Image 1: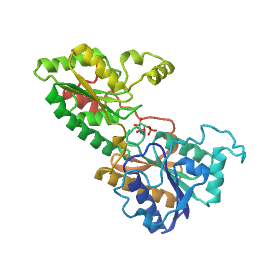
Image 2: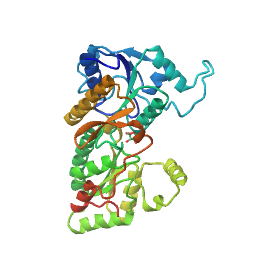
Image 3: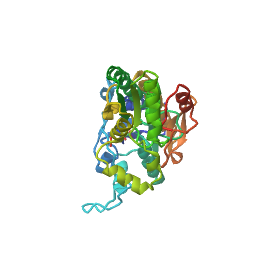
Image 4: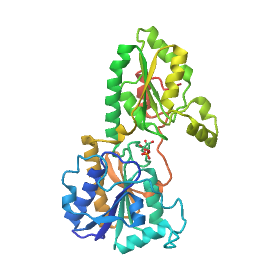
Length: 360
Ligand code: F6P
């Protein structure tokens, strides 16, 4: 079939997530098989685009990667626009190097798979004249303009399975078990895993918590004959006192805190309730491993849709899911934004209705 693009580059950038390889497979297989395009795999995200490390991709690169975690291209958190200092050797800034490589490789377009930062950089590269298409990847599900990002459901599954396991030991020891999940800015992962895992308390960055309200909830459970509680804490959760601080002071205080938030919540709850407490930080377990079927299928839908945008020459967009339909949204609408959990979100309402304490 005819295509506006003959040759494109593809890269994965930002935190890795299960489903990246399924998305790469969706883009490149469709582009090659349906539209006869040639694909260049750019290594380690924007770092490879700056430094010129890339390789031609062939059919053999895609067999067996649908179910593989991570990314066959590697990734980094390189931000090309952050430090526009010319390289002393070449006299070129990172963005100038990107443009030179884009031209040297004879690219007609660039496909980037990433979260907020990646798609914001993509939007800025589009402003510099590159033909760019973005795909929405992050376990945080905190990208605006899309109902869902790939990687999120796998992380929810991993976190929920962990919470299920923690329930049994909490019950056996009559303890408060505090489980820390990822999500610095937005609490979607903590909310969904907390509800799915039956968390008694779920603390999100969007709802600053009152430690005494949490303790009261835990003590009520104990008085009802349930002297154990599951407390799910997003790594970006903060207290009401911290919410009153200016951003700079809060960031400094957090940087100086010698342990992550879950340990502080556990310690404070043990002090107030005299119930033993223990902590589990799930960390990178939520970013690793095999994507769940939902994410494999979602990433494939996003990938194939991106290949069609390439063929149509419909650049400057990110493929997004809106009302169960994949649509292109302008990268400009993604730029610099974060999708926070609204206080009236239906999942927040559902959590409250089943008696979950949200720290208030
Ligand atoms: O953006 C995804 C994410 O996993 C966040 O949930 C987490 O806070 C962050 O990446 C960790 O970043 P890094 O992988 O650079 O340590």
